[in-house]
Figure (cartoon, rainbow, N blue to C red):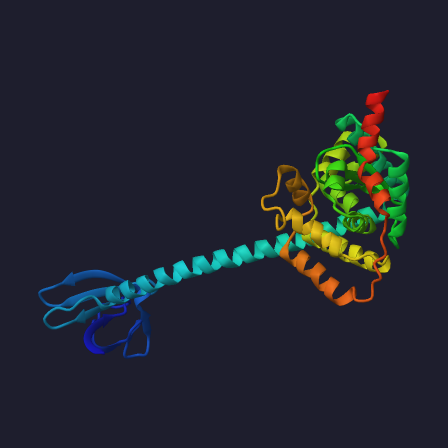
Length: 364
C-alpha cells in the first residue's frame, strides 16, 4: 500500500515529501530503507488532518509523517496489535512446549538415574561375598523367630517330607545352598532372605492343596535366590550401610527391609521363568503353581481374605505372569510323566509339621 509522507533525517531541517510503501510488517522508504513497525514510536497524531508522526527508535532524530485523507487508523499500532495476539498465542505454545520438553528431559534423567542406580546396586550385590549374604540371612531368621516368639516347625515325618520335596526340585546354578524352614504363623506368605534362606509360613502350607503347589512356590522362591533379589532389595534400601548392619549384628534393620520387601515385575518375571524351568526339569507340572496363584486372585474362592492379600502385596500377581505360566503349560508339559512328588502320607505329615510341634509342646 502506497501513501504520501513527509520525511526528515533529523540531520538537517529539510523535510522531504515522499511516497512510501506500507507492508504487513514494515515501511519501505524511497531510498530502500526499511522501518519495521516494531521500531516505530508514535510522536503525535492529528485526527483532523490525518497526520501520524513517527520516530524510529533506532535512528536518532529521524521523523516520518504519514498523511491519510479522512483520517486513518495507526498502521503500526494495528500491526503490533495483530502481532501481539499472535505472539501471545505463540508464547503460550512455546511455554507449553517448553514445559513438555522440560518434563521429558526430567523423565529421561530419572530413567538414566534409576538405570545407573540399579546397575550400581547389582554391582555391589555381585561383589558381596556369599558368606556375608548367608550371615545376613541368618540374622533375618533370628529376628523372625524373635518377632514371632517362635522357632521353625519340626517333626520327624514333616522334616523328612520337606527334605524330599526340596530334593525333588532340580534347582541348578544357585549361589547358595537352600535352607528351607516352616514357621508357625497364620500368614499366607513365603519370604526369601539373603543367603538362600527361605521361610514358608504355616498359613501358606495350609493353603496349598497339593505337593505340586508347594513345589511351585519353593521353585519360585529359589528363583529369587538364583538372582539374589533379597540382597538387591536390602542394598536398594540401605545402600552400603547394609555391611555395617551385617557386621554390627543389626538384625532388626535388615529384617524390616526383608519382611516388607515387594519384588518388582522384572524380579517376579525372572523368578517365574526360573521356577518353570526347574519344575520342567523336575518332572513337576506348573498346573499346581497356576492353581495356587488363581486362588490368590480369588478366581476359585471369590473374595480374598486378609491373610491371602499379604502374599499378593509382596509377590504382586499380574495378568502377564498368569498368561506366561499358562503358555508354558500348553507348550512345555506335553511329555511330563508327573510322578507324585510325595506320597499321600508324606504330604499329610508335612501339612501337620507345625501342629505336631504345637501338640508336643502342649503335652510337655
